[in-house]
Picture 1 (cartoon, helix red, strand yellow):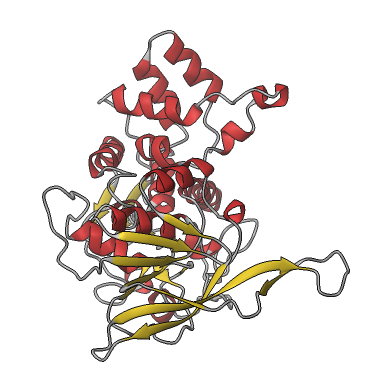
Picture 2 (spheres, rainbow, N blue to C red):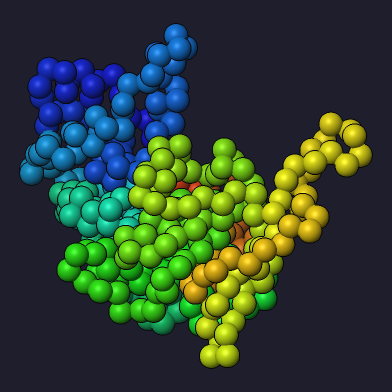
Length: 402
């Protein structure tokens, strides 16, 4: 992200929290969010680790600055006549690009399909990881830069790319994310009581089920829940389900050390009562006479070297099938971009994995003046990578419009 870490830590040490926050938002437009869920690659690079010591808690310091610092209200607004940029999607990459472009003097308008900005941070992450209050605090920064956010503008329903470009925009950025689930070819996946991770978390967020003490979920969740997957979405689903008082098992086909989540997040899950079942592969969801989930048939996995070549392979353990007693299954094995972008964007080249093709150097798509960034290009990744992608796209758009 390019945050001047030594500078903002020095300002915190001197007691100037407001100035520290100003340093952070020069490069990172979502300090409250990143202070909570960033994967903290900067801590991995901390020089203290070279000496065998623990890194400085940079993420926690950023959270402190975001929570207690105040942004100056007055900002100089520079407008370049005729230089307007449209952005599709108010998720992390779209917001990041918008902030950088606004700083350069462009008039920026963001078109968002849902009723509030934030994308995956609002609808795909539970309240216990990102409070909506913290997210709104970050998004309120955008008003200081004159960025316009238009919600409930859905691609294909009330707008198309050519319609947007005809409104006088000099460039357009596609940052619609990868909010669709990767489907799993698993017998019984169409039974009642089966959810995909993105759907489950959106239901949790939209029905205010995050506020567990005040609201009862308005959708069916059984007493025994199995979550399939090893990434952040899977763990978020498991941690949300356990907060409803359910018995939750998180199963995945590789080892726990190979999970795509931070170790501290795994520890949180265990402390909250989630049962981790590594080296397990689901093979069928079993249903009852009413077509609702009654169990999950699985097989155990292990690494083996059958050919004695020192090339270990993940293989099924013979005669290890078993049935897990569950009545709800949540499948969270990955994401993919929404295909509506392709459907309503004539001339836009799409890769085999449904991501948008872009030039590696410029970030421009196959259509002149249209760029793409974030998970709609990379398919999936942490919020900090989407933010960095949006920032890079803003630089490319600026170079294009100069």
